Length: 246
Image 1 (cartoon, rainbow, N blue to C red):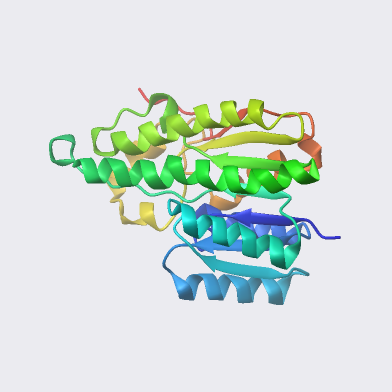
Image 2 (cartoon, one colour):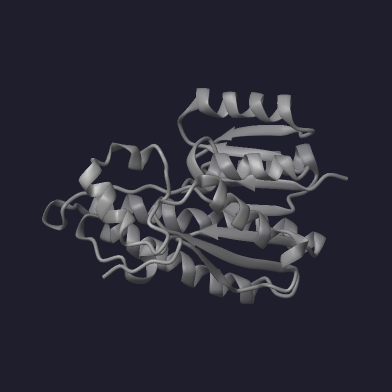
């Protein structure tokens, strides 16, 4: 029986690459997304045409508790189980500190931290019943040492997600492994707007002198979720090419 992965924020970027990676490995895939219907539809089409996989798409804001409960119920009703959860959905609202509002901060925490809490709680109930499962949270290397006033709420949320990872790994033991990845700057649509000077400054912070690729993060996520990592729990894997934030 095929394993099932639920990936939040999966219509683009790291989430999309992760969906492709799991489909390659023979998983059935649930693509959660919040707004881009066309992107989710196109990804489903790509996966089903190129891999032996059954794909479900589900439009849902992960910070909406009622919607998340309904999403998880429908996934269980359709597939009968969830073997892997990837908490990838996230937002960044880059606003100067003096102009950043409580609403900006709260929205960032709602999606980046409270969302993973809600989804993990709801999926975890079923994983505990089946006495198996793996959760991988997508944090950021900015959780450690990224001092940038425009995204201090993002950085705080990603630091909180690492702490949540540690707590969940203890709570769900011994049946569910909970780990996280902490990517550096990755080549995504969001970062494509940076000018050449900004890009050079960012790349020079990394020992490999380049941004990471979404598929490189996806492979790390898959590894942590796979049986090859069966004795890895409560860990944060940095996928940042070596980084010096100074």
